[in-house]
Image (tube, rainbow over all chains, first blue to last red; front, side, top):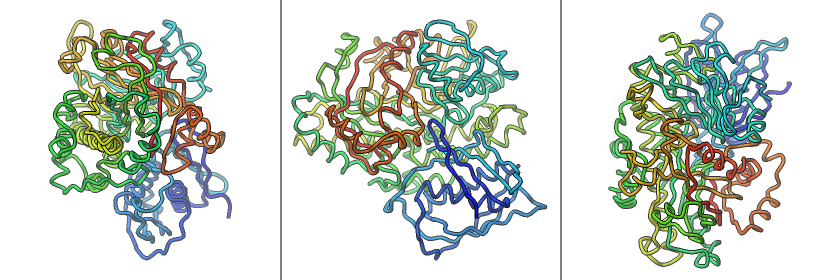
Length: 141
Length: 483
């Protein structure tokens, strides 16, 4: 498996470049990049499930909504995902259905590395590459 | 490196002409010295000044203060006023995720000699008493109904609950409670997220700092404010925490859709916006004001915890320690203010994204005791150098929609600061200057290293030379609590 994501410099915030073979994997790897910032890689027992359904006007918006939903769910309901079962249907490409498995992770008790405020639309890019997809997102931290 | 077109207007003012980019409705203006400008052009911030000039209904120019740096959508240090009568828009990106992030400054009657041997104790007690860090949880527990009141009343709610006194409110922007907050425009999610974090400092660049006044530039104003050389002051920098982030996220989602609906063309989707008179904007304004009040309540509670900490260290009441509030400013907010445009009085929506309101002497919004001197403007610098107290000017009212800078402004990215810094060396360096730091993580301290910031002396110099503010005094840090 190749590189899933890498971070790049932005003066006030943090940029992440995400690689994937499919669009679903792009969404999954972007979530992994996000939580590598927030909590780092945690070995957790996935004993809880959470369903997320989102719709947007285009794929970029769907990606930003997805990341912001995960940030919001983490800081509000203390849900840290471990695995992501994501479905984006070809005939309905701007709708996402995901079944997340994870566990409760209380950010008010446990270590949080970076308080990511949100994913932004600034310089947001999603490109098709010979190997699949590449995206760039800037997080407000 | 930004290589766009920029022209000199004066030694401290630069223009990006409308012709730079088709679609700009007004020109861009950046306040900076020649030396700072070359630094500013190293990232993409000037392009963002040009992008903001696309906003429908923008009046006169898209402005940037000398602490300008690359943000998302708006640059940090950006100011834009829009006219509701000319199709003017409001953009959540022009306020930012941390709605009403701001600063307050308290004085004390303590002098350097009184605290010199107690710095470690003070910083330890502050660190223990004031919840800080990324996921810090406040000691305040609010029900939904109570949170509603907090959103409507801001710092006034906190005072009613025993956090401070009525006199504190007199010296807050909007008296710590902006009118027009609409808790019904706030999502359930934001309510829930906000409940856990009221009364917490937060992380990143938020801090508490005990300082000493080390230089006075305007003796008359300093005297009126009760400030003198060698005096101890306390600065608090915090905002609306997760509550504000959620409000911003909720409404960026709404306003992205408004771009098509209202046929608005902007070069960056983070500038998503809606006409001020639209239902979407009205809801955002109600929610943004709720978040602004949340932040004012938060800083009021934080100040109370600071006062209690000093009471513990000095075994005296905060009143006998003279811990009175000088002022509280918001530096991420949109406000409706009156200005004369082409001889006509207009109510404009002034976005300040990392910029501070700076009303000049005589402004009717100012508290009676500050009416003849202008509004106090608090400029936090980095933790190794200094911070400033300035006052607003008439010229700022005429030129910059009563706005000035908000801090030193970042120079290095967080990654670069971590990569090029070493924790132990930094702590040693600060300690050789007599500065003690407490933080939940080493990473935050490195990210916030003085070398990651511009020199606040230069930033303050530019806004004063440009006439947007006047220097009152400078404060040097003694100890810092970082999130």
